[in-house]
Image (cartoon, rainbow, N blue to C red):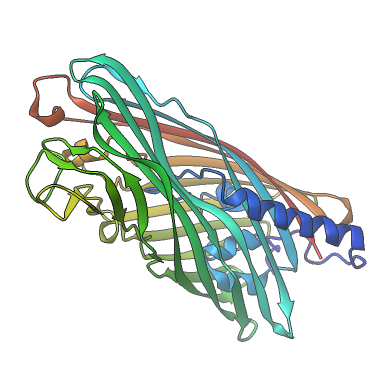
Length: 434
């Protein structure tokens, strides 16, 4: 038999005390409050490579290799192969972003973010039925640019998409080889934008919240001790409308994809709609020897269905809506992860991720405040068993810098447009096995 990815599975301990149970309940309550006030950032489009530090250390390749309850968000069927546990993850995310609107490089003024996650799983009612889920920071995007003294006046460019998800899940182990799982994806997103030149522009800066729902289904099959395969499908997450109460809107020449250019808008209510895309993941977990795991995974994210045009409806003069031509393309992502059991206490892991840039160079002008352009990441991580059924997991991530350059702003004879981005993160996760 290969080694269990959860090193505490075979241990025998007493039932946790009332104090421990109360501590776990307090952590859950605290995360629920934290989750809806914290920005989350991402690398595959605006989706994180992995949720939780085990997934991050594996480069996100966990659809066939579940290692903690947070991996249920990738494939809920994986809960059927986990011991009863809960885990809390905290991550510090540091994206470095620069742009050139045509008047010299400028950097983002906000570069440090916190990403929380909490997950749990346990059998319920019968030995082969498992319940779990969690609350996660899964996705996000944004910049905060300010460039004074340009020929167009002061340039202010701000964007914020914060995405938090709760996913109650169930898994059923059909036999000793096959499991199925399903999760109800309930999410909240906060969206705001600001791109103004000399005080005129597109200004929807007051944060607006929308709420959405979707589902994830998945399966896992253990061929033998050396090979497990897994797959999952996430449906489109349908969200309620976003609303802003604004005035004096102005969409400059070249920004609008529909209707006349140079559109102005009056005082009133503006609204938009931003769903989260469907996606598919499939992978294999291979054990060349019992202590060594190699996991490979492929993902497809349908960004074009949700990020092609961002339509804003409102009291525009002469038109009913303005469509910002983001024109994101669908993305394929390859994830690779490996894990090795050094001894009964330590596991070490590393990962590599490569994804296609969903933003074409020709669409850079419309995406200067949405620079989801990084493609390649490396990750490292480790887990240590601690006394009394506790565990500690750490992970590091680095995405390599990517530069995209194209054209000039609004066809003016100025410097070429540019977006540049790289990312680093460090996280720690505390787990407890029931």
